[in-house]
Length: 282
Image (cartoon, rainbow, N blue to C red; front, side, top):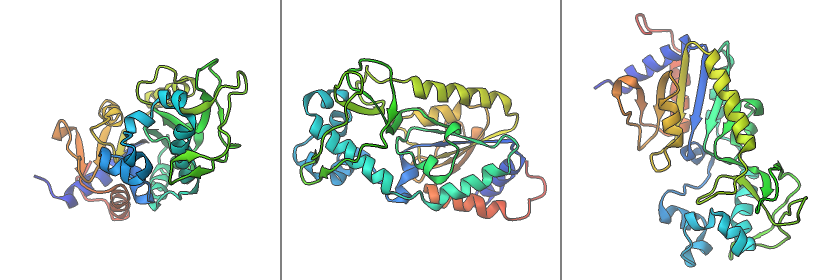
């Protein structure tokens, strides 16, 4: 078994040699910024005690049916999240990743299942982010009457946190006046308008075709919803998986595992990149 130090030396060597950096991220990326962890009913209900008292599971509220049955409750949940993400400052790991990307001829692309917009807020170019599950900062019709997607910037939710209910008016579709919803892929969701995400994904695939020496840094992507992990493993590059609890790779020879949180992992990589290169590492 290799030591953490030797793995970090090897990861640093891969990063020095890379001509493009793919950054993939799951929910664990935001924990060091203070964002809640929804893993399991306990974590979700701790973040939203009103839903816990009502025994409403994450899969039930993060669901298009909630906007049809109780839009004030659905927007109480999503409105609180929207306000939280707007107020949250990305942790220092984002800045460290930006620094690593700046040295690459092809720069970096982000592939994330997170809907929080933290990568764009941290300074990553919006045109180089693929939000594979959509974005809470964009809206669509809940019916939907059309495939329009528009910014949520004008919506300022006022939420009664004790009841998880929206106090002010929910946003409406400008075409049919139905309740609008976040442009996010939810559970049991046949109405998600995926046009924006599909364009992002195609641009990412085009970029990947242009990179010859790809390194993927995966951060905080778990196995419960394995979208990000599968993409990282199939990206045809060297993989550095950073995860405090689920760092294992399907094939140990396919990459490196660092059992660290996102911020600690980024800091460790940055520290090793500042050291002189070890002879013989590739």
